Image (cartoon, rainbow, N blue to C red; front, side, top):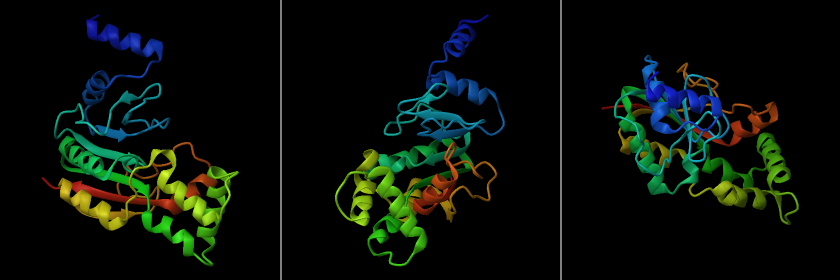
Length: 227
């Protein structure tokens, strides 16, 4: 048994987070269409190199604010599910450039993030029943005990909660993708895609109510590496 094989076996036995270079080698050796999941949290979809800055067991360490420790032009898909809002606008644009670099020509990225337009519209949504359900649900789930109107509490929490740094509208995110080297930028409904790799990929482990609420708030764009 080689030293590398002994290390891999020890990592698996220990159940420890898998470090990126080791996980990368194993993932790329699988051939086919290697896929990268950024900011996975506790969601570890099969067939993906699942990464996070603070990785759970079975995930690899990757800091999206730095150059990815990955070779260029090797991956078929990159998923960025509710991660870009946790970094600054400049860091988010750099992250998308890294996504383009590691994708092969024709590779695809999917970026999902809170929709700024949906968030700010909560203060004037009127009789929109879905918006009202979202506002009431979010106020109970995230703002319990706070004093103020549900709209004000939920909108402020969307900007400041969970370490959010920048919320995107569709125009700003689409521009960032095109500037990073992507083309054919298209919006898709939450959990729906015409690419089988992305179909149903979001919201792993979320209950039906959570899916409805996440679907309301989410802006999801897909794009293709153009060079």
